[in-house]
Length: 195
Image (cartoon, rainbow, N blue to C red; front, side, top):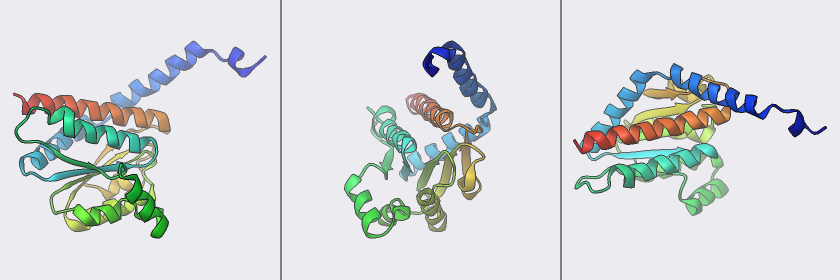
């Protein structure tokens, strides 16, 4: 009999959903409030928000940046300035090929980053070298740094000014929590900026 036939799919569904719900319950709500304040300050002071990650986290970074540019900013006279550093494929490949994959984000930040900009690095493990290197550079430049991390938080949890930590040893659930946080921020910012 195949594994598919012996697996209790209903149980697996419930188990996965339970992990997501339990992780959401443990999420530090105060850190979401702090992140909202950081983003509103960047918006009011016309600072740029940079966001980036690898793999599934790259997808979350693109999604978050798209929400800043269109979803949150749509129909406002003043708009969010946001850049997703994993979206420029030719730049990423040139930097990775000619310098190092560890430098794909930091080299782009060197072109744009200014003091008091916001830099959001997404890494479920918290230990992606290219994310760490970019956040270290951002700290030295005087930017406000934010980590979206999972598992035990990895190196970026303590490296940044603020960590949004999905406290679970599960890659997929960590990624899901990060996207839920992104959508939560989007809805809150829309309400604030349109009130």
